[in-house]
Length: 135
Image (cartoon, rainbow, N blue to C red; front, side):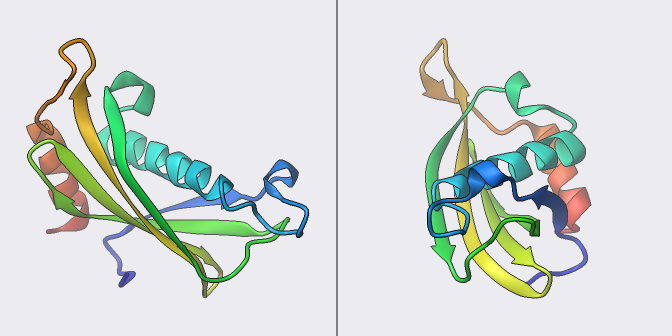
């Protein structure tokens, strides 16, 4: 991922409970870090909390590059390279200083739980994403 000025960045502090018996962040915790970063993005860029919307994660991929250890503060850089009809693809880069610890991507689908079907990404989200990332 090419980090540039129009990417969203948030910070996550590694907690003791995140660490496994090998002394680094357990691989399953990365999904939680991505969720936290996504929640920050939705709140700050789209003006909505994750608990206020109906979405599902359709895909999650993480590539581990370097271990993350206790007492590190990780920066998560986010860019949504693709907004589909009912989905929002997001790419992440987790960094400790200049070191890339992991890269990841998710596909989040807007979903009407009552009708049990995908729905369109709101036009105001498309506009907010476009303005924030200058696409």
